[in-house]
Image (cartoon, rainbow, N blue to C red; front, side, top):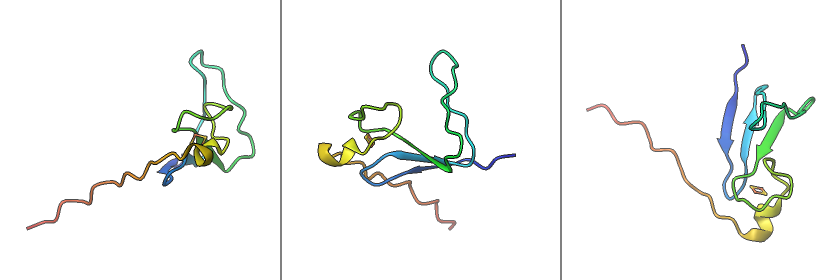
Length: 74
Ligand code: FES
């Protein structure tokens, strides 16, 4: 069983690791063979969508959301 991890990079792409399968809307698989990490564009500026090509830097993309901390037990 794979252990997929999805990480939202600060001001950058969504980084997926752990052997996920990527398909287009028709179900065709993207070849990510040999890639330990796959970066998905979330800024909308990549010329290689759905993958990141680094264009977020020139675009000045800001994405710095943080997950809420777990509720403290009282
Ligand atoms: S997140 Fe990198 S090009 Fe969009």
